[in-house]
View 1 (cartoon, helix red, strand yellow):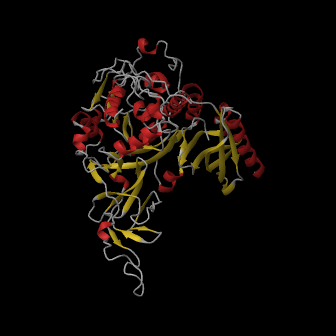
View 2 (cartoon, helix red, strand yellow):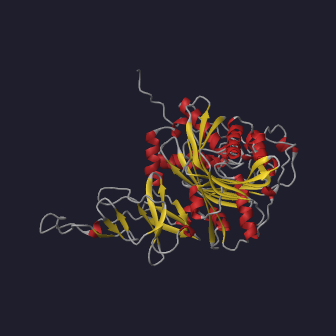
View 3 (tube, each protein chain N blue to C red):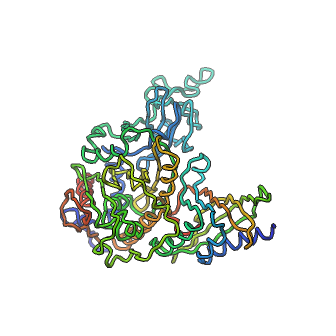
Length: 152
Length: 411
């Protein structure tokens, strides 16, 4: 299980960092929940998310929007994902907390820390392997450096 | 080397050619802080719902000066400068909290919720030695207390004793739209988004005084009629041209004239999930489905279908500003309405489908101003004059702001 979990996170980072955004929704279940939330809102129990997608359809729409509708300066992402801390492991699935760091590299500019936080994930076993049932990205970064276009 | 440059910074008459240097020059920026943010203007501080009873506070900024909005024991709201009267410390570091008194940890000078200095350690010396001079008075050394205006749950403050009353400041035409959202109903705080945009603060004011771009830059607005040149709309300013409302009604059908040649229009765009566009008309809207209000210089009030926010502008030097979104709803909202507001929030904020790219274009404009300071922008859509209109194919609101700005800054 541990190996499969590592493999899931490695694949997650790889598809985002390679710009294979069509592969990103495939790592989620059909009725998944994906949210990017400032730590401030999370800690205070405030409902606002920076990105809040319910169901794989909305994930696909976000990928389309990021690529085809949102004008932005192009950039690479590099995800550094820490070791998963499994907080529950039952027949229903796995709960895991994992630190992450996303480095952004814009054209002509040095790389910079873009977003730092932790994933709070629920992961289930499916016939295709482990998949995210919910993924909550709680970020510490107090100020988003202008904008977030791609998934974290 | 050579002769000093004697060309005036703003060489064109009128307000439709804006010189690059007013976005980049540190001296002009300092004049803006002094005359606009610290001068006779009301700045946004927050919503009353952000406070939770006596002693609760929220720290924020007006211009580059840190201030604390705090509720006292009588339920009054004070706005105090976050700077100890002793050695100038910005002593309050938490963003929110509840305190019995405000204490500067350096030498424990202690203030009450009204900013009054309650006491200082060793005032009378120790064993008859040292201490404050005989003419030291606690009452002379309070925190700077700003004037406060509260209207229907929204809090503004000003450093200047001469600022006119808030209602006169906003003016009746814009106040009518302010009251459309804030009519005294109890609000609910939904949360914050914060971004730092590498551009001059005025570019964000211009962005929400520019009804030309949304139907061109923002695919989602074009495709779903949320903001488009064929929408029935009106542009309204106060008498000075500094504040403005862009008011419009959503089009359900697409007029070929406004999508022809518009590269952001996607005729074949098909969403997998349309719940983002599950728009429910709220009775208080009346006819308009969107109203974007700029209260100069510090805040934008957003009602775009079911999504509501205040967007605060905090300048950080001439070439960047922090942009703080506070999303809210009404205490009377059903759980479904709250969920809808949160879903539609995907359109807005630093990752928003129709606002992430506003930050991006502002950054690129700033880059353009930096590379050639002799450049002037062209804001002549709809002419060179300043007037309210019943359409959105005009840059009149930007001209209105600069007419006022030139007067205040003296350029």
